[in-house]
Image 1 (spheres, rainbow, N blue to C red):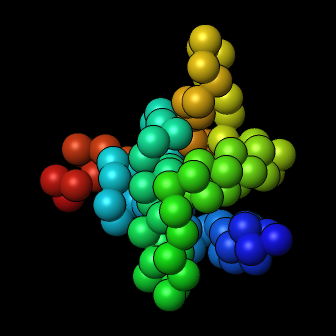
Image 2 (spheres, rainbow, N blue to C red):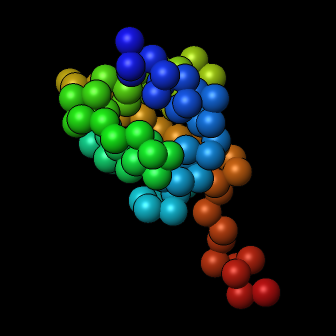
Length: 103
């Protein structure tokens, strides 16, 4: 199955993928992460890797990647009617406080 190769790329490079997302979206430790943002990031990340995928494939890959990141403790599900929002639990992406920026 073609998607499995792309899914493996995402799983093997999940930290690189998060950095890619952070470059394009407001992504910080303890911020909300929305499914649609992840879908577009998956599509663009793989395109940068030379792999063009359909939006349907991006939706599937996003769901599988989100499950993987929940298992790793990087995503914490937000309980809502759609279950398509997570909180990012990734201290490396802590937003710098204004006080430390002024120093």
